[in-house]
Amino acid sequence: MKTAVHFGAGNIGRGFIGFLLAKAGYRVVFVDINPGLIEELNKSGSYKVLEKGDELKVHLVEGVEGILASDEEMVAEKIIEAQIVTTAVGPGVLKAIAPIIASGISLRLKRSSKPLNVIACENMVGASTFLKEKVMEKLTPEERQEAIKKVGFPDASVDRIVPPQEGTFLLDVSVEPYFEWVVDAGGFAGEIPSIPGMKAVDNLRAYVERKIYTLNTGHAVAAYLGYQKGYGTILDALNEKSILETVRGAMEESGTYLTTRFGFDKKEHGNYIESTLRRFLNPALKDAVVRVGRNPLRKLGPEDRLIYPAMKAQQLGITPHNLCKGIAAALKFDYEEDEEALKLQMMIKDEGIEQVLKKVCGIPEENPLFEIIKGYFL
Ligand SMILES: NC(=O)C1=CN([C@@H]2O[C@H](COP(=O)(O)OP(=O)(O)OC[C@H]3O[C@@H](n4cnc5c(N)ncnc54)[C@H](O)[C@@H]3O)[C@@H](O)[C@H]2O)C=CC1
Ligand SMILES: O=P(O)(O)OC[C@H]1O[C@](O)(CO)[C@@H](O)[C@@H]1O
Image (cartoon, rainbow, N blue to C red; front, side, top):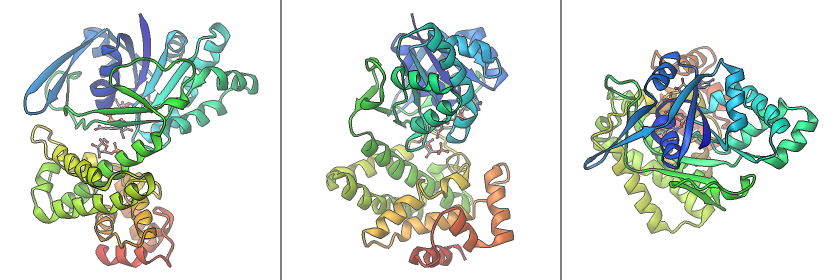
């Protein structure tokens, strides 16, 4: 049986990537830092994915096991046998798992000449490329030369809304019916594995930017505006007409950039925005604004879902007021259980909003967006 090692047995790990890998006939070995999850995976060897759309579809995922990330030797052994390694741990964790992937690759290069592919399935443009850099830093120059030939790190775009889980059985996971997993065809080592549901394309950048700067942009604006108005879920936030219109407006502003940059048909892109809004409004997904807004420092970064499309739209002659409203609301996100939110608020208090706009968002003071965002913030 083929083996897949997947880092991060969380929502996307179990509900999306691990699910597709298991359906494709892989034995999925989940690696996680959560002992409860690992224990349960090994006890049950299976779990359910509940697809919640107009009707409920239940899928049984079998042939799964778990290893604690601290059990480095065992993880490395599994990487030696694997055909594919995937991750869904969060962009900030990739650096932490790079050494363990590197030690698996280092052992594997000594014992096997078969190609391996490592795909980081994170909300980040170029996540696998980033992981590759961190893994390569840990290899010797000789290993690096070999790894360049035998280990592929194709970048990917992952799209499926999997909110925090409710219920008693730890492993079962509720998901929306929609999914899209797109991977850079040119980044694979050896043959592209056949995994139904995984699409290999030549123009990955267009897919990944379209997804992050539409879905994640709109979702983030909904989350931060919703949080400001005291709503708990995305659905409740979007039921307020003014929030819905700002979210749609923000997606249209980023859409101007996306259609210009990648040549998407404007009408089709408009339909993509509307179908994304319908996904946000799925009543079966109780998606908390604090989950969607988590890690505001990352989300306010220059390459991320708010600032990047705002700057790009501005370069095309548009004043992206809706995105600026979303950015201003993000700057106010003060959810106490989110470490980054606390750091952000501390920074605003100690250094002022101007420093945050410059240092965190990378917006120069002379850029007109600077004052517009400040205007919505105050
Ligand atoms: N939930 C969603 O709707 C979507 C999430 N994503 C992306 O997928 C990634 C994962 O997100 P979720 O599954 O929602 O998060 P999650 O928090 O449910 O899962 C992350 C898992 O990684 C584990 N983890 C943390 N540090 C680790 C380490 N050092 N080694 C191994 N495992 C570790 C955690 O214990 C957790 O089980 C993120 O990059 C997110 O942006 C992408 C598309 C959709
Ligand atoms: O996972 P992140 O980057 O923190 O952001 C949350 C966003 O990611 C998703 O979970 C999936 O893209 C969305 O539901 C949400 O917009």
